[in-house]
Image 1 (cartoon, helix red, strand yellow):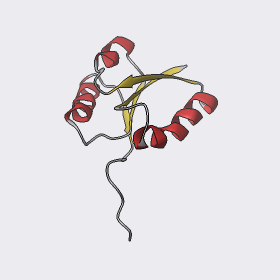
Image 2 (cartoon, one colour; image 1 turned 90 degrees about the horizontal axis):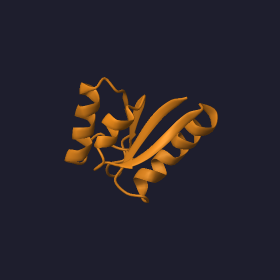
Image 3 (cartoon, rainbow, N blue to C red; image 1 turned 45 degrees about the horizontal axis):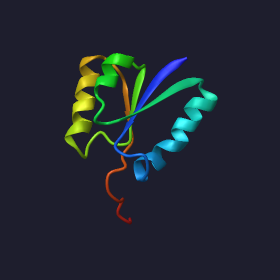
Length: 90
């Protein structure tokens, strides 16, 4: 079973809504253990040693950038969506 650390900044809102279908599929169909945390809980990266870190954004705050840097230095893969701002109409 793979450990996936999902870090987010709030318990509700667009970030959780965009991550929900991915988390559901990983848990139900890929037999992954999902561990939730806040972006301010960077110590969880070192203590849990996840197989993957899942973020709604890799940009948008200093915490997101610091998480990406920490994971890079620890050779932990990151999967990040882009949930920052609205997509303009084409």
